[in-house]
Image (cartoon, rainbow, N blue to C red):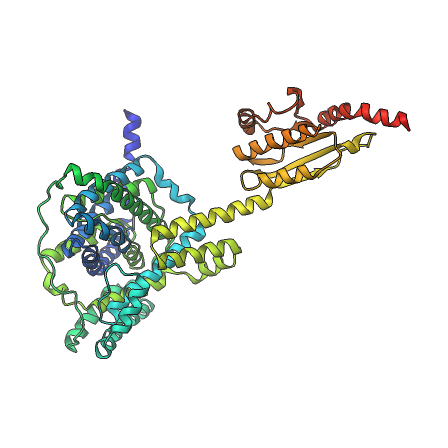
Length: 556
């Protein structure tokens, strides 16, 4: 019982979550307000794009943002509806209706919680660095491109590829409106870039929002604004379950859970490597707790008619760049959105969309470190290729496909590298030569003998002719899998069929069960043909060829 309580305690809030609050509460408060304002139009837009409506997007930002901030595993992660989730939800809404999203959100939340409790959150640590950086670069490009419609005073096409939508929006923009919105974007960017040089403590994003909104009203600019907002949250209720539709929603729920887990963990991992305005890192995150927190957040939104939520890298980046240090910032962000719903919907509706566009464009450019990009590109050709491929696929397709292909490419290059470092070398017999030694061959297997290198080893050994005894040294073999062990069986069998006696030397303890179970030892002519010392193996080999050597010497 005590062990169970200790284990579950890892997933619960603690005082440690707020250990920096006494010195960072002012900055966190301002960061939360800034992120709340930035998150508002995104939440509305994602709700509309997914087909469930603006209100659902806003509900998700409030409820999921609050629950994930308290229960999640990152101190700076900001959660809510995201663009990647829209891509998955839109077909579900089209097939099952908007009412199905609450059920999908509940199911997906349960699955994500299960992943966290099972300890699979740590699997994100195995995602290679070039894949993470390529994902980050791709996300930054998507965030920037997503702002082009608002920056040009046009509307993007829901569900359309981000790059195509940006190009189409720019081509459809009208000159007077586009000139005004681009001027607003430029002004916001200038404030955000120049103000920190005057004083790092100034909330540049928030000041940019206020100045640009006031300027737009004073100049009476005819540009798109946020517009009307809902004035209240619905009463929480259990999602309506119907046995027949639920069966059809299981697979979409699995896809959504996978997306939520991957996006949240990668967002948290990227955020943990970012630094705030003070140049200090944001600190580590707890992967398993992050998953359970995100799962609970999606489940909570289901009771309010919301949609599945994930960690949002755009809002998280704004949070970090604004100086957030503790969870208070993400909590304030949710409370700001809640207050806006009830108290200030009309005032916030006056904010030009171009203002938010400028903030996110600057945020996107700051997400990409030129030093990091150069480091990856100058590392190895394989890593550079994985980095570029992941970034391009993230922009051209979607996040899940990018991660899948990035991991596959990284795995292929890694296996290729392992295979190139693996091989077979023929060694000279140590000590003085004796008659008959020319009929003995010593083969040393190096590196890793796995499915990527096994065939080459088989070919190399089979090339050797005119031998009577082959000693295969396994002491330098660092890795051996079932395919490699089976190849050893094939090598031994092929040599024995040629009349060559095979001796094995140096089977490592960690490989002994594998070679025994696969049949390597059984394929030897005699169980005594297994040695631990090379000298003993050579002496035994000479005993096999000595009669032939002696016969040859007598005949001469």
